[in-house]
Amino acid sequence: MAFWCSGEDHVYALELKNGSFDVLKVARQLQGGADVISEVVQATPTKFYPVLVHSEGVNAIARKALARCRVNFRGRAYRIFTARCGSSLSQFG
Image 1 (cartoon, rainbow, N blue to C red):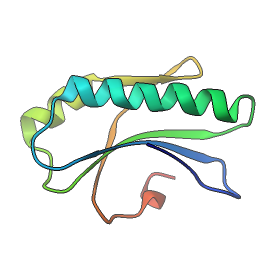
Image 2 (tube, rainbow, N blue to C red; image 1 turned 135 degrees about the horizontal axis):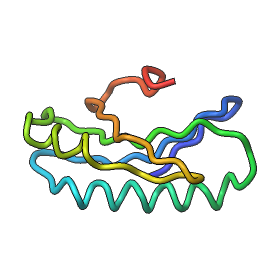
Image 3 (cartoon, rainbow, N blue to C red; image 1 turned 90 degrees about the vertical axis):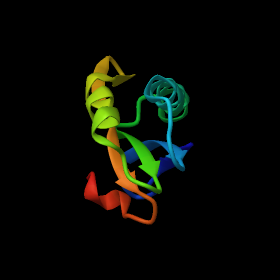
């Protein structure tokens, strides 16, 4: 899922999860979102945030694995952020 804040320069690749998840699959899904966003916004200056949105929290093992994963956007590797369902995306910008 992708989200672009109108009137701002923030774009988000979002992956929504409930319960347990495969970290590598999350990273691949976020990379897919980043690729789509790159095509849509093209040369528009943007701040990019790949975010795993979860309902039950992320355990320590998954956090460590996520910390090793990166999502590439416009030649730069971004770490994956995490957020609880219902939290504001403004915490990243």
